[in-house]
Image 1 (cartoon, rainbow, N blue to C red):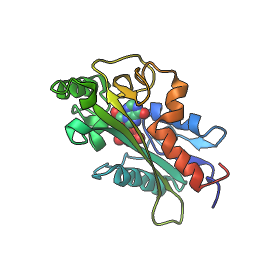
Image 2: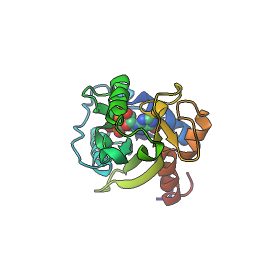
Image 3: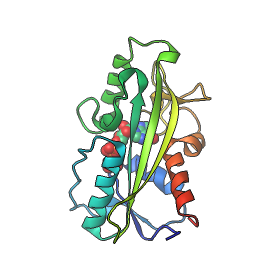
Image 4: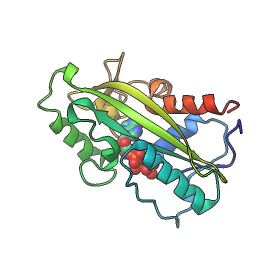
Length: 200
Ligand code: ITT
């Protein structure tokens, strides 16, 4: 198979992610999970981005019968031993509470004020689960940078206002959205997917 099968279910409940994925796959027939409100969200209890991406892609493929593409992603901060990592969406306790997550991250990094102590990377693992294939195909992308002392801007979502990618002084929250679309962890994972499935 050299092309992505269509229609393709994008296995995310995160509207911001879905919008970025639509922009990274222009012209493809993509279906969001809104079309399936009765399907329960799978439990993401994997210890790695790969494991959780696979859980989501397989669960949604099996629930709908459609080829499914999942994105498991998050922020790994060196000084925090890789936290929040796979817990990025629920770092402060409540799933998707961005303000609380970002506030907790700034508190955790207060003992590390120097820019050189605040290295971090965004990670994205895409899992493509195709009907008839036992294992999903996995594609990983990373974007390295650092955590800023205070939030900047309101582009993007999640930790974007706190993250300045390498080579830039401003956050993904302030940088033009085209910059994130070109260099993000998600863009890099999609570049890998495209290389493996030429013709997309
Ligand atoms: P789905 O599982 O339904 O896709 P989710 O938001 O729960 O949605 P994850 O479990 O993969 O997805 O958690 C991803 C979290 O990591 C997300 O909620 C943000 O806090 C953070 N994150 C991931 N990608 C990001 C990005 O591009 N910019 C900023 N924060 C990001």
